[in-house]
Amino acid sequence: FRSTDRGASWTEVEKPATVAIASSTVLADGRVVLAVQDGTLLASSDDGATFAPLAVEDPQPLSDLVEGRPGELVLSGTFGVRVIKVPG
Image (cartoon, rainbow, N blue to C red; front, side, top):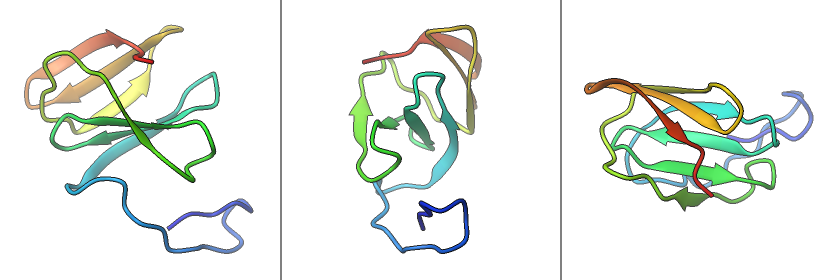
């Protein structure tokens, strides 16, 4: 579901991945990033209307992500915790 009015109303949207979305965050530059359980990262620069995959070297199963220092993502999952440069 997606809301463009801070949750006053919701619209069902197509899920941008075939596996479960584990976590999401909004970056300082305004992009929305989704962490998919299989290690895929999806990014949207149009407030979640569309998503495109981000290139990630050696993707690992994910359970959470947050933006760390500027230009970095902190990823956690079954492999532990790692920091990567924000792709794209």
